[in-house]
Length: 312
Image 1 (spheres, helix red, strand yellow):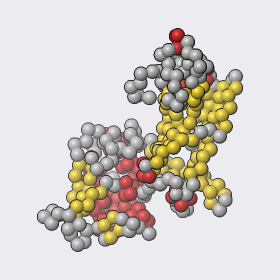
Image 2: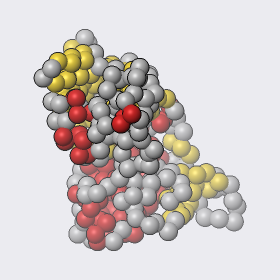
Image 3: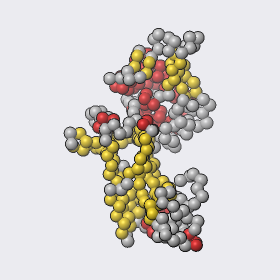
Image 4: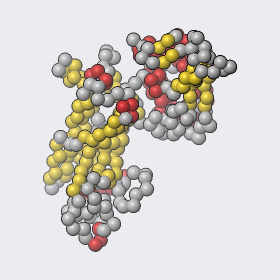
């Protein structure tokens, strides 16, 4: 909703004025035809889990549910709203799966419009194999049907079916262990060491993306013992030490305020350096911050667990 637009779009003030209320997403999957709810952790970027750690989105799929209520939908129409009188506003969920470069939309299974308000209920199942790695869910308002006639005092409003009129909220899901997201580049350079890491000049790691542009771990295949990352991992124990040391370097690069915000998920943009580090903190046993030595040791334990699970 902060993007530049040449016509009125949904604002926080209008969301509040029309009495829009959304339930929290619930996520589940089918286990032997029985539906099992998944636990959520995190704020801006959410990870899903269940007690036995047997659920995998690629193998078991994912079911989502959500309800949206608008107490005063008429406030969205007219010269003070975002759509002309006589048009029809639609509500849907736009989903994006970056890992598979797929996107799509989810329409309400129930869309009940009455004089006293509007209720949209969403229920959608991603079948096994349809998504993997990550999922972005944007609750979107759009112009479903345009008005046949637009009043003069409403000609500043968009009247084109299919145009997005704003987002109500966005949620990011991360299905992978953190090591799967780690920006690794293989090279072959006989005059270079086995591995090294390069950091860019971060403006703010709470905003800057956890990507090769900002962090890159180089593995040099010119060395016979170089770990290889693929369907399985060659020289796993060495890779554990390399990635653990890199995580330590990242934590050390953060200043006190950035480290505090990382630990507490304060003001972290999704997929930012600090957001991914926060997910790493949540993913395993508690880290020990008393000294660099104790921090590295606890990081090693968690990286070893994640890499060995991913290499099974």
